[in-house]
Image 1 (cartoon, rainbow, N blue to C red):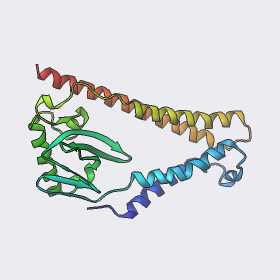
Image 2 (image 1 turned 180 degrees about the vertical axis):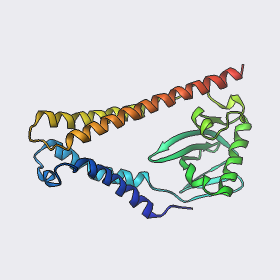
Image 3 (image 1 turned 45 degrees about the vertical axis):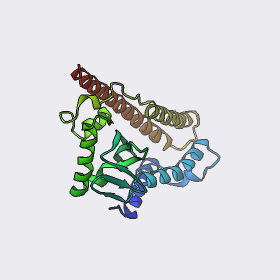
Amino acid sequence: MQDTVWDQWKAVFFGFALVAALAFANTGWGWLTDLSDPGVQVIWAFFPIFGAVMWQLSRSHWCAAGASWVQHGKNWVSTYELTSIDFGIDGVKRVLRVADSSGREIRSLSLRDVQVNAKLWDLTYNGILHSLHSGKCEISPRALAVLKLENTVPASAVPARVRRPYFAIGFWIGAIALASFLIYSFVSDSDAPSQMLPIGVFIVVLALWASRRTIEQYRRDVRMAERMSSSRR
């Protein structure tokens, strides 16, 4: 199964519509021609990057499963020989990151892609359960919670140590730095486009909210790992 290219175009269009609504609500489009303004240069550089990122993040891959395997795009793993299961966010999608004993891995197995088809999900889910009960597979606390397996898998399958979200926090710190530059450009230059202020404030609020959510999720993962660890004693 695979989403159509139209789904990707919808994601790109929605993203640009949101940015346009914030940027052009007050004074229209004319200020975009002032390329001597550093803030305008940043925004022009942001547009193609934003479009490419939205296109890539909304992209889906062909997905299939058999009695003992699952394939996503060109990558496949043996679901009955899994050694690690982790959960993550790939753009706008919730994904599993799985690897098997032969070194094969799928870094972005979209839960939406596999769960939308009951037979496909049954094959994948049964393999995951078998691997976890084999004693040779570890599952992260977050993946455990998302798959609702807290009372199903042995406690030994959950590692006691939780990976810290350095990359996610670093990304949002970078976003705050960009927003701060836009706000500074607006405050220090009386001729700066008025759209810079709402865009900068929006990015700061979004980054702070996302950072808080990331930290809260990390704390939940730690509590889950500690709870599973205590049950092993």
